[in-house]
Amino acid sequence: MGKRALVIVDVQVDFCEGGSLAVPGGEALARSVSRFLEEALRRGGLYDLVVTTQDWHVAPAAHFARPGRAPDYEQTWPEHCRAGTAGAGLHPDLRLPAGAVRFLKGEHSAGYSGFEGRSAGSGSAAGRTLRAFLDEAGVTDLDLVGIAEDHCVRATALDAATLGFRARVISDLTVAVSGTTAEQAREQMRRAGVGCVSSDQVLAGSGSAAAPAS
Image (cartoon, rainbow, N blue to C red; front, side, top):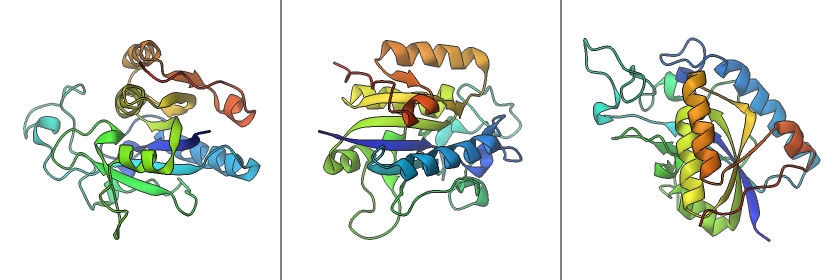
């Protein structure tokens, strides 16, 4: 039987209130994810691995709006999550268990999907792609939470389905940039075979994972 991992997408300072690209509810989400994860680990058996993704921009091409140009909030964005800055760090209210692995993405591109990232740190485990890391760990099922549902969560979930993982989004542990794009993202994920569950369903052991994408 395969293993299940929790993928925490981009719960970073710049994406929470007070950050340069804040999504409403980001700070509360960091606390909610922490409470959920604490309960999930207390019950045991729900997750074999926990990973996080982070925007980590160095020179991400056209991802940042040009100076003097307003961002369109679809393809161009205000400057955010510069590599090594406080804004690129995980939100301090996000409490992770020992052994959680960080994946950094978007150094020289938009980097929406966590599967574009590579593991941080040093040693033999550093620089691994998310797919390679999950495959080697025997992970077949993914639960996804984080910021923003209509952008990086969506992109990570769609890539997960394409790569054959059984993926589901925990709907009450995401926040979105806008209601309109959130609805579009949910429909796109549904068509790709990505499941949608609540945190209560996960903790109760219900809410079956979606089948792998064909």
